[in-house]
Structure formats: structure tokens, C-alpha cells
Image 1: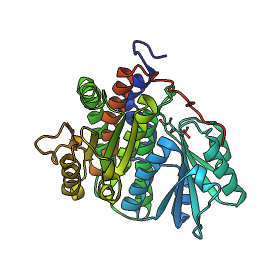
Image 2 (image 1 turned 120 degrees about the vertical axis):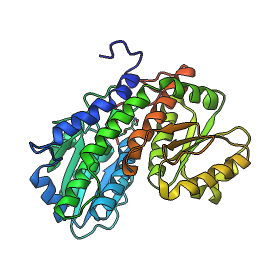
Image 3 (image 1 turned 90 degrees about the vertical axis):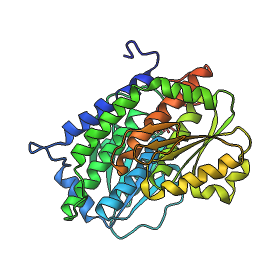
Length: 357
Ligand code: M6R
């Protein structure tokens, strides 16, 4: 039940700190270490390449997961949109392992790939919020998200749960390969949960951003680089699906290869800056669009912030930045939709679970 909340989406946004803490509890052993079942770890260790397959928001979480597995555990990962993969399968490595990410575990496009790769004799792991869902039953292994029921069509807490679980998966693979990831994931996920809580208490800031930047626009751009690029893709999807503002996420450096032609006076460009290695690069992309009249809104991370940034996120480990950066995006989308009298929980043309291909 949504209780005193006006919308399920807002309730589910607010639940995110608890979801991260629930995941920490659920995946910790008696020694306090984050573990996954031995047979899943074996399957991951045996693979020479992981293929993550998903749709929509779950696909965006998969992109972040690729970073985790490649950066922490040194295993190559490909991430594919399910509806493309099924009809245009890439060449597979010798020992592939498939990872399906699906909040519902019922998405037809993702399931079609699962059925196909099982027919081909490959092993599959489903990461889902619904124990006993079709894709959980049909895969060899399941990792649960422990996010609790997600009712709003716009996925929020499932995304943060997917990212948290993917970080745990990556850290486990790294550990079994004898790789030191260089930080304490339990501690850092705890810090991220606290940071999310702080952001959920800053709703009026995000309502103001929605009002200042999005009340009179039909289009909006989101830009980011490196892992921030993946986070802005999710920011754009959230905004378009519930507010019907045309929103697109771009890699900051790619703008000059075409998209910058669309920048004109007053167009909102929301830029994310949480990654030290590319902070100066994204800053120059912001200048490029500002010089062409864009109404720029920089959301940065503490420590990388500069004068004029519209909002500064609490500092978290760089790899976990998407967990916190998505909160402003979810809330900005929520308020933009509200200001336009859109049906936040049930956007037009969309269903919670897309069970047709
Ligand atoms: O249940 P799934 O995670 O498989 O769903 C995938 C997408 O349909 C879903 O993430 C969709 O993009 C959401 N409406 C996004 O908010």
C-alpha cells in the first residue's frame, strides 16, 4: 500500500536506502562478508565472458554492472538489449555465461533470449526481484534483489537494487580470482545508503530544479562521461517515460559529433559530474553547450564540485556514484511529471511488465 504517499513512485524512491541495507543483510554471511552461492560463483569463475541481457532500466543497470565486473574482476562483459540480441545474436565466446536482469522476471523480450540460450546449452543466471518468476524458474541460477514489490511503472528501487547486487557479484568474482578491489564494499554500500537518505530528504531542491529547467520545455538533454554516461541514460528514460518530455542521454564527448546541432537557446542540459578522471572533460562539454545557449544544470559529486553547480551529491565511492546520482534524476522526473499533471504511476502506453515481444 502507498500509505500517506501520493504515488507509489515517490514511496519507492524513498525506500531505496532500506533496500540497499536489506541487500547488505541478505547477502552477508555470519562473518559479515558479502557472498553469493558457491554454484553461482563457480559458474561465474568458469566463464570467459559474461553476456548481460535486459531491457529498459534493467539494461541501464547492466551497463553499470559491466563496469563493476570489468573493473573489479577483470572479466570481459557485453551488455545487450534483449529485443536486439534475440534476432541478431553476437558471436559468442567459448565459455559464455548469461546474466538476465529483470525486475519482474516476466519480460517477454528478455525471456525469449533466455529460452534461446538455454536451447543452445548455455548456463543462465537471472537477477530478479520476483522469486518464482518465469525467468527465475527457467534459469540455472537466481540472485534476488530484495527490493520488495515495485508497483509504479517507472522502475526506481529495482535499479538501485540491481546495481547493489551487481557490485556484490563483481566483488565476489574478484575475490575468488585473488584480486583486491581496494575498498570495503560493505562499508561503501552503507555510505551510499546514507547518501540516498540525505537526497530523499532534499526533495524540494529537485522540485525546484524541475520547475526551473523543465516547466516550459519539450526537450531535455542529459550528458555524462564514463560511468556517468550510463547513469544519464537512466535519467533520460525516467524523465521521458513519466513526463513525456523528450529526453536523451549522451556521452559528453559525442555531442560535437552531431547532437550539438540541436542545442539552441534555453534548452535544458543536465550534466552529471561524479568521476574524477573525466571531470574536466565533462566541464568543457558543459561550456560548449552553454556557449550555444543551453540552460545547463550541473549535478556534481562533493570533492569534484565547482562554483555554479546546481546540486552537489554527497561523496560516495566513484564506482557507486550511479546509485546516488539516480535519485535526483528520479525525483526531477517525478516533479516534472507532476507539474504537467501526468499520471506518474501509470504513464500512457506503458505497462509494468511487458509480456509481449
Ligand atoms: O521487469 P524488467 O526489469 O524486465 O523490465 C524491463 C523494462 O521494461 C523496465 O525497466 C522499463 O524500462 C521501466 N518502465 C523503466 O522505468
